[in-house]
Image 1 (tube, rainbow, N blue to C red):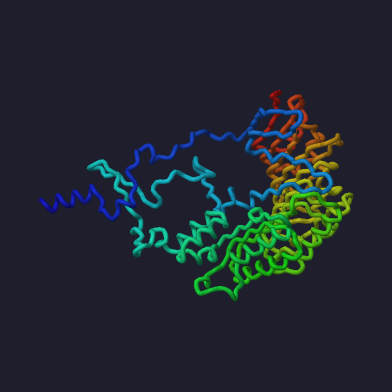
Image 2: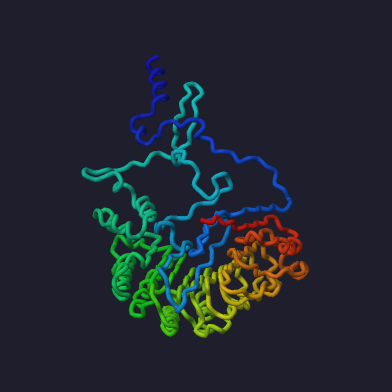
Length: 497
């Protein structure tokens, strides 16, 4: 009887060594995720008509919309070649400057976010006899050898400490590494390094880049300086944001190629912009040539580049073509407030052997953009304010998504979509047009002119249409897209102060 009583007590009360790892029993309601409402999906087209309420100030034309799918509003083009305060690309830098891994998409009601935690890897079982949920571990608890005077965090293995540091900004991770000798080698073993120039602001460009280059060298030391604890050191994801300063580009190039020599780098991203200020066209062209010289001097680094974002630079007519061809692994290219040296020239991109998948033009100054042959291109985002049409598509057989945004300063003649899009783009599935509460710059045309291009079109977005606009002009899109499933129409309503 005493043995049975002891076993019964052991069932009800877990051992003392486990109580510190176990959370209190959760109510039944917290264990069940909310179930999505069951609704039969209709095969007919879904039309979402969302009027946007915003506050309009006659002296400030910035609009804040509440539509999640709406493209970013076009920014004003800076006159005189000025460069404003740089904005680090959100697609490159994690929110808050932290080097955190991307969230995993799920199909449940918590898609796009994190599911409620149920105590990590622990599964909760309900005991039918006593009504208590006794947590059971899939694997035995981690045994920590905590020495005298040592905290429990430092007693964790390097793998767990590195995962923790990779969720911090690089600056905070380096500071954490200086806490104790136990942590000192950890910043040199981070697999993700994201270093931005905004953390090293000094009085002059040279001082700023000196501080940036020194920080990069300390985090990514050359091979001859690797110590015993750094033999497994290899950066898988390297993201750098810096200014095109000629004396410092060579140091950056050597450091990057030394990191690549380990052979384990999977992603390399550059964001290159100018120090905020006013520049003449000749100065912008000089910075552009410094970048081209940088790409030719360190071909191994640019050959492994996967993402490139440039801001405020001027290029020759063939420079961007040469740059794309030099980057064998380039997937995404963003050109923000850049221009051609001869602004009335046509930017022609003809890279039939490139793996480029995404192109983004934000106020690129030229006469027109012609994508002659980019066979792997799948997404194009273009914001412009000059002549219509902004871009003409050539051979782009894998093009799936096109987004066009225009903020007209003066009236321009509308253009036909059939003159802009290519008949080779038969895989086009998403088309977003943002009119920025101004004139409608699309001219209606016969549906049969777009039937081949729109044969697989399933998602159309027409954003920021002024309220007085007659929507009958949109019917030609509906008639030309037999597979259309979603039509988003957003009007702009003013609340006058």
